[in-house]
Image (cartoon, rainbow, N blue to C red; front, side, top):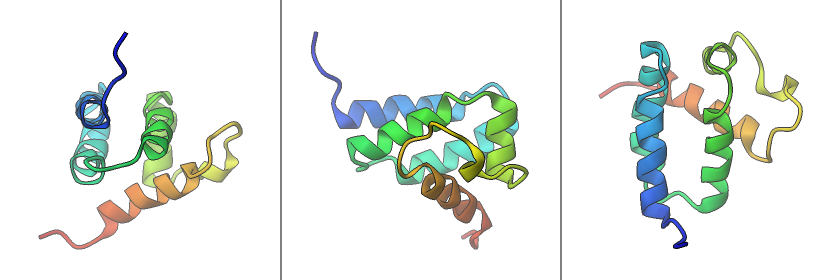
Length: 95
């Protein structure tokens, strides 16, 4: 079986980001993924994929600040920074 390239993996994760199941999460994750995933290394994509695998209510709470990522156990290194990055992406000025 052929290993997935980083470019194809980024495309697959971007697709998953835009089709989470709720419009709110699509709008939180989709634009971030479009901007941040191209050119990302494999380890960071692993962490992002862990984030995408979370249940929707928990993921929404993490991204909107209703829950803190450091309260979760078993998350990979860089998970807290990833959540902070997504929050900062949406808090920044829009062009």
